[in-house]
Image (tube, rainbow, N blue to C red):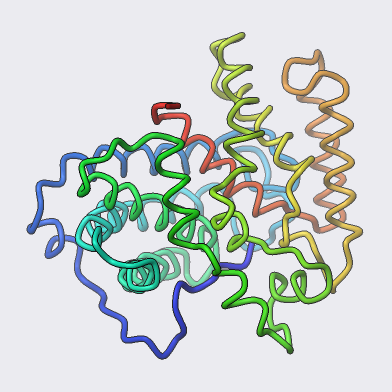
Amino acid sequence: MTVPEAEPRALPVARPRPETVLALHDHAHAAHLARFAERALLAEVELTPKPGLVDARTTGAHQDMDITTFRTSVAAIAPWFPVLHETGRAGHRDGPASFLARLRGPGIACEEAMFAATGGVNTHKGAVFAFGLLLGCAGRLSAGGHPVSVPTLCHLVARMTAGLVTRELAPVQRPGTYGERAYVDHGLTGARGQAADGYRSVTDLALPAYRLVEQRTGDRDLALTQALLVLMATTDDTTLVKDGCLDGLRHVQAGARSILGTGGALAPGVRDRLSALDEDLTARGLSPGGCADLLAVTAFLAELPST
C-alpha cells in the first residue's frame, strides 16, 4: 500500500534520536504500547499460511524478501515506536496539521531504519505510516489524560487525518505510484483513506471477526486468519491495483469470499484452501500488502480496551 506523507516535502524534518526524546518523559506507557505494536507486526508475518504474502513457509508473490527480512525489519523499526508515542505526547495541544508535521520527522527516521536494515527492501512502509499515527495519537491521548481504547484512539486518528485524501490525492494529475493511480482511475483512497476513516475496516469488520473466533477457540492464529480473510474480502487494497486495472483486486476479494463462504478459519480443511489460494496469488504476482498492514493494526487494537 502506498504510504502518504503527512505534510509536503518542503517542510523541515527533525529526526530526533530515540534516547534524546525518551529522556524527556516517563516512557512506561510508551514502552507498553510499543511492545503491543511490535508483537502485532511479528504476529502478522509469522501467521502461516497467508495467501500471496510472506509467511513462515513461503515468500508469497515476493522475490526480494522472506520472513527473515521481515523479522529484521521489525527489530529495526521497533525502537522508534516509543519515540512516536512520546512525539504525540509532546504535540498534544497541536492542531491536526501541526501534529502530523511533528510526527513526520520520527516517521521518516523509522522508515529509514527499515531500509537500512533490509538493504532497501520495502517491508513495512505502510505499517510505519499506520503505527506512526496510532502510537502518536495514543501519546496525545495520554498527555491529555484520556484513556487509550479502540474507540478513542481510532476517533482521534480520524480527526487528525481528516482531509488528508483531499489535500494529497485530489490534486494528483500524473500518478506516480500504484496508490495515486488507483485514486485517479477508480477513486480508491488507500492508506490515507483508511486512516481518515478511523480504520473502520478494522473496527467494524476485522476486529469483531477476530474476537469472535478467539472467544470460540482461544486460538490467536485462527482469529488472525479469520480477520485476514475478512480484510481480503472487503478491502480495496491499492497494492493489488496493477496498471490501473481492478482485476487483481477483484480476484483476491473473490478468493477470500469463497473461503469465508465455506466457514472461514473454522472450516475443516481451511489450511489446504489457504495454501491453494496462496499458490494461485503467487502465480499471478498478487500480494495483498495493504491487508497485511491492516491485519497488524487489528492485532494491535485487539490488545486495547474495546470501550
